[in-house]
Amino acid sequence: MENAYPGSNILVVTLTNGESKRVEAQSDEETLEEAMGVLRDMFGPNIPNATDIIVPRWWNNRFQRGSYSNYPIISDNQDVHYIKAPVGRIFFTGEHTSERFSGYVHGGYLAGIDTSKSLLEEMRKQKERKSESQTFLLEPLLALTGSLEAVPSLHKCDIPYTTLS
Image 1 (cartoon, one colour):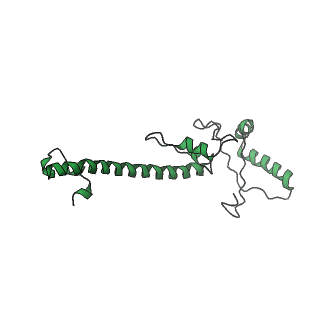
Image 2 (cartoon, helix red, strand yellow):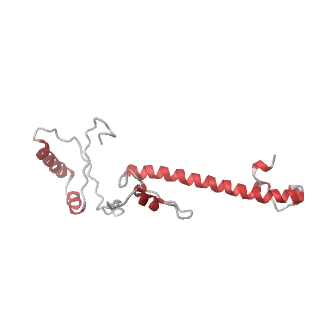
Image 3 (tube, helix red, strand yellow):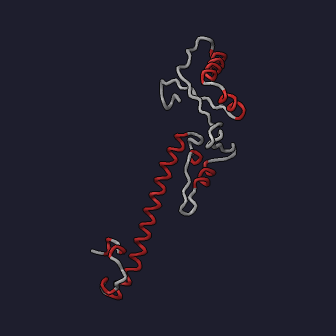
């Protein structure tokens, strides 16, 4: 956290499996006391007390059940690309699609921004393709009829702006 918030002295601890269940069952005060005991064993008795503690209780949250994504050691960024690849018009996002911050809230946030940009780009491309196909069909029609008025079923809103000039 020092790189993200210089001078903040924030310490992040991740507990898993049985330890996470055990710690979730105790009070924040008990957890703080236990953590300070471990830190004092590591760094000596003269370190200052922590000013606050946040203990998320993911295991007991019915939407999370203690889970977050974790890729196997043998995986690489290509695996993330496969997981977040759109399937047709369905796009995937979330912390599990973040190459740098998988498993973290800010990874989900940043992945959401990236996926939004990808979705908007795909929408732009589809709009261009639709416009090109309309122009592609309209040009021979104009050549044959000489006028748009000769085709009553063609609505003016169907005609790309560039062909009206």
